[in-house]
Image 1: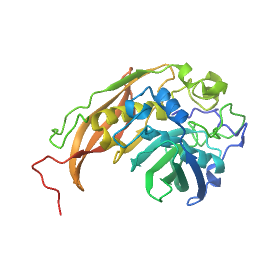
Image 2: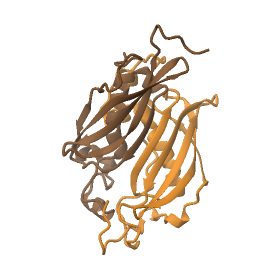
Image 3: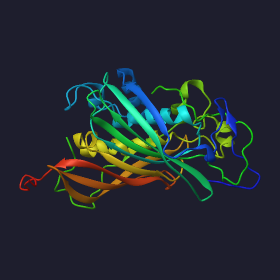
Image 4: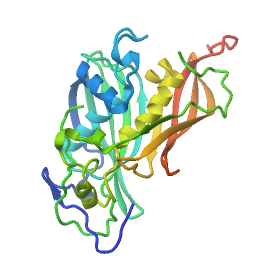
Amino acid sequence: MTGEAGRTRVARDEAGARTRFEEIEVGKDLGEIEWVVAPDDIDRQCAMDDDAHEWFLGDSPFGGRIAPPQIQYRPPRWLLSRTYNVRGVFYKWEFENVRPIRPGVRLRVRGRIAGKWVKNDREFVAYEAEARDESGEVVFRTTRVHALDVISRAAPRQGSGIDSGVKPERI
Amino acid sequence: MTLLSADTPLGSRLPPVARRFSVEMFAAGGAKTIHNDAEAARREGLPGPVAVGPQVAALIFRMMRTAFAEGWIVGGKASLTFRRPVGANEGAAAHGVVTERRPEGDKVRLTCEVWVETEAGVKAIVGTASGLVPRAQAEPAPD
């Protein structure tokens, strides 16, 4: 990370003002998203990750096609984006694959802000999410940490960013 | 088929998984992002476009899926720190070493130290990942 004098942090982007550290509410419920993985989503995930394993393309020992577990990255990120405009950079990723993610199965993903802190002059936000299937069984759990900015918090916020913290809700 | 078993010695290395990234991989449907546009990256304080973090971490996940098979899909865990970005046109490889063995229910959890190293020798992602393997046949499960 860098923090040279004279640099600035992005203040806004096409989605509006970037969320300031002070605006993040620890414990805030990020709400719930209903998510059904489509076969095309699995195709795209396999292409992105260069991992066309047979279980992701056809049958698997779990009975039918399954998705690469890391497809779970996006819905919790969408939940964060619905509440806060954080571009920043990804800093930590913890997760547990509890059950296979299957196409056509309706999942409910719920998230909350787990914490925030300042370290090395950078601002961090942690959020956690859990996905359950229609039977109420946990499918995955995850906790993420994002740094709000690459540049030191001593740098003022001004100017516009090209990229945004608000991401399209698609795989 | 899993490459690991309850008898796998601690210190065993997982087969690495390597990939060369290119900025075209991060096209994002034409939108300019820190992953595909130099000016978008510069405004965020980055020296240039960087690879998408989860796609870099996917090298670790592929390594773990290859090593643990079903025991990664159900029961897999990871705790990763993204220490440095990987350039959007850089090469990188995932590595892993088995460091711990612990009974868990009727299975055994093998924990691995894992990391992604760039072609320049920088450890971009570090952490641990674990998966489940069957118990050795002679080892009874606890009541």
